[in-house]
Length: 301
Length: 271
Image 1 (cartoon, rainbow over the protein chains, first blue to last red):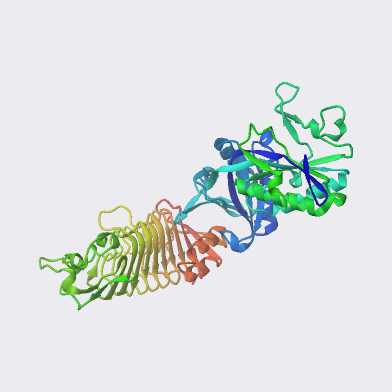
Image 2: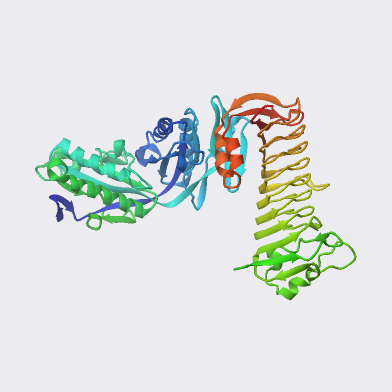
């Protein structure tokens, strides 16, 4: 069963999402290009917790007035399934990708109920020449590096109320129109605060199902949504469908994920079925695995 | 709510200990009870009511008017609220302060902010020697909080500071930041001879340099460091002048190499 909004079929189903641990960072640099470069490097290979350890992406760009040191910056979000894994990923990625980036500095991007070690873990790179600087509740480490100093806040906040796995399945009759719809949705979601779409350009073409016929493979292709398997498997696709793209959304709060899905659906509907997608669906596991359910009918524009 | 106001009737015959007149000390007391508080430092008893006209109000906002330099220990160990002093104060104002805001619209004597732990202490006039410093026998001086002096400071400002920030918008006397263990001391204008004497760790910033820098500090070059920009943003709500100074290129000197040598002195203009 589906609803039709401006010619686009919206399935009466829901996206099923899971609780995650998350943190946020503010990365600054002398120019917005270098701040973005550091953020992109740090959030590379962070599309899925299944294979990358964490999911990460750029939340938004920040002006000089919005950053702690008055330089242009970027806010980055990281999500993982456990606090220990999030700490490990945060430390490794900041050490290898932000500390190394010319002119960069790194600050807490979230006030959380708990904290993760940031500069407190990286300060040892200073080999005894690191300098601690406190002001009020703020604490940074100054680590000498070859272009001056790497300034890094001691800790950053952790939230246990984050949500991972909000999703939209965007279904179309041609690849270009489906991609156009997915791009429009990803662009709309990028404007929503406190969320990321961690896959390339915010879009994933290899949606997965849990498990596999092969032993030890945790996830495998979502055959019900593969157009080329229509007829060979229990397909969820109509005869005119040739392409399905998915947007996966992680948010610091369940409200942020809902807002992002709403923005994505609105963008798809606005584009219409001729230039965009003919149908929007969502992935779930029958509602038994994830505590967060986002019903598409509740998110219509 | 209107503040609780204490107006000094006349200059007292003896030095007075005003340490009981802090918000947590007056909480729950009636006007009569406050007037009975002892302030004497000699054998001759002096009560609040003897030397002050009291107008009751919110004890979290205390205003002390027409003060003089015989009033010692104002704001001692205050942990919250606000004290505004209209006039000069004696020794050890804000000693061991642990929170709240203390403002002196006048001059303060020696050992102001001695051993301060937290809060904000503003002195609109000048301040005596050993701002934030320890008393004899104490290991560390100031341990937290922010002190802003709009005027000049005497000798050894920030002596043995462990943590916290001191901003002096005027000039500082000899040996500013002596024996500092950590923390930040900013002198917007010129400092006297030998700043950072036996500095272990910590940061001293001198806007207009000093009359003599110890040879045990080594020149590390001139920089516009990100950490200074961060600190400038933190300090600007307290002192725009200090924020502007930190955004300028600063020459860094590491030292004091006579001791641990992990401290630093930043100099704006090298006169």
